[in-house]
Image (cartoon, rainbow, N blue to C red; front, side, top):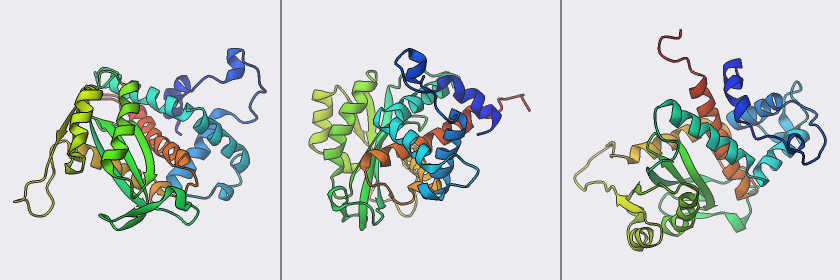
Length: 263
């Protein structure tokens, strides 16, 4: 991280339990160094044991990653960054509309058969990332499943989680894969309008579809972080955490960017 990024990030980090009177020992490495290592791993796609020698030991960094994953601290950190960006753009911190979609990626050999499958439509043997984003394209929720899990089945679980966290969400755009009973389920159970944006039969070649391009842009960003080009994680919880870490890269750089008239 640059100094400008760290100035933004420092006040948004979760407070350690030791500083909240919950006990525990002081951490051996500063948070900035640990965050740099995790970001380096996600951005460059290296193995945990392939850390450069000038970084803290890999096992300590992995213990930090595992603790933030299991206690949802990475999601808390990510959500604070998202709220800060929405505030800086003059938006309310809670979104009212969003877009849902999924992305199938090939799974590495370490991924077990219990969490991988074959996506017949994309011809991919691996996992599927189901995401919900707001209208600026920032992540609201992610769920990783086997690639053979249907979009509608996964959306029911994911949308319950997202609407519980974002009570003002009222409108969601989706592609034709989310038609059917899911539209009625969202309206009756979640008070959420699911609007289907379909591709016209007369379209030829590449066409930018309204609203759907927002979530496609997020997928493009995820594929720029090399750890996410394939799914290398043994657990789906780790795969979801990697998506959140990838988005923190994008958001910290955006917040640290000089504003108009400042250089």
